[in-house]
Length: 141
Image (cartoon, rainbow, N blue to C red; front, side, top):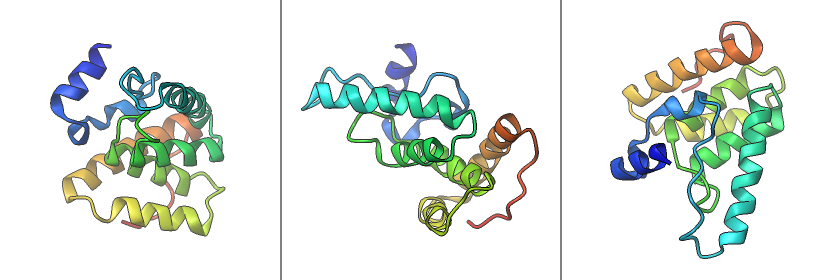
């Protein structure tokens, strides 16, 4: 709860990319949502995908990157840096498609150099934790 309050006080666009590497995903409270039941379902699905993404599941990684980029209809804290880092993880998964490469470019290219550097650092940590190896795919940002 403290993380949510801190994130809200800083603004949704200033959320630290540290969230992407934590065990608990960056989900929001659905109490104020227009459709709380739908929001809770999306949050539950995101939480499940988040756990699978950390185990190397390609589809779950795509879901996590998408939700971190779009907010999944208000159920997840938008974090463009974390979304970019997950797209880099996907590119290094060995299961990346052409669409995944396009998503990486669309998500990461508009970011500042500082944001890109943070995404690279986070993705290096995630690839090392998930695949037990360094990042292999060249930078496409």
